[in-house]
Length: 325
Image 1 (spheres, rainbow, N blue to C red):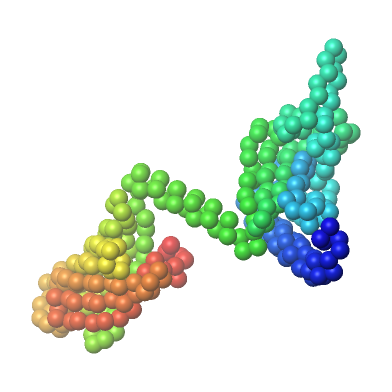
Image 2 (image 1 turned 180 degrees about the horizontal axis):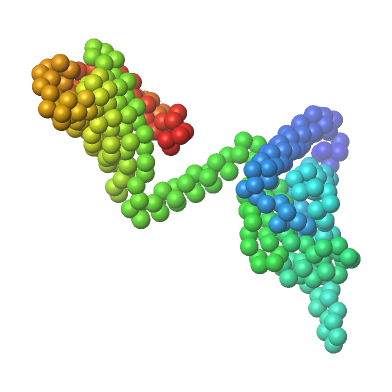
């Protein structure tokens, strides 16, 4: 009675209800756009073989809000059609209605959630001469976007079960969890993780080093591998080991032992080079790296047994050498 006779209440409903509805519709529409973009990319890069999934039968499209009830089913089917093509998509309106199957001496009626075997039976009855459906699709709306599920009708394999929102936050959380699971599995197996570091020490003494390291241990705190250095020594190769201290800003402390290649060659042919190169045959280097936050960059301090000290920039876990990585 209050809403019927109060002009103020009617005005408030007219002003605010359409805005809320529009916001809700916009969130869902943008989520459907993200769904199309992600799935189209997967089809194009062959990570999802669309030909193996077709034909796709749409079993259920469920809106979650009254504001989207009128348009969401059509929009969801349209998105699926853009991904799989109109000829590879069919809808199963009978899948959501009470279902009756009549066989000789037997009548079966069902009105609950539909199973895969029932989807196959309905598809066989209604598809005519078309090819049998291979995949069943469900698209459901939720507060932040849409939830999509694709299931192979031949073996019950879940092809896709994923939530899509406007900023793909759900997808990012899923990928983070998957990456974490892979990392835990790698640690359990004791497998190493390869890293590539490049140090450019420029002041007051110069030194450039490239480290090929394996990260290992229960907490990934150990790194060891091969290092190549120029200028200190002139050209050297050797082994390196570092230890990461997570409680101290992830500072990395370690060192390397390098053999001077030019001096080693000169000595091998029996020539007395004296101090011509300014190198020792073996050089030890103490290195301290301090990462900048969570980036792949950091500051580096280098102290060598040749009496050279320098500060510079360290590029950690770099990928600018694709022919090596």
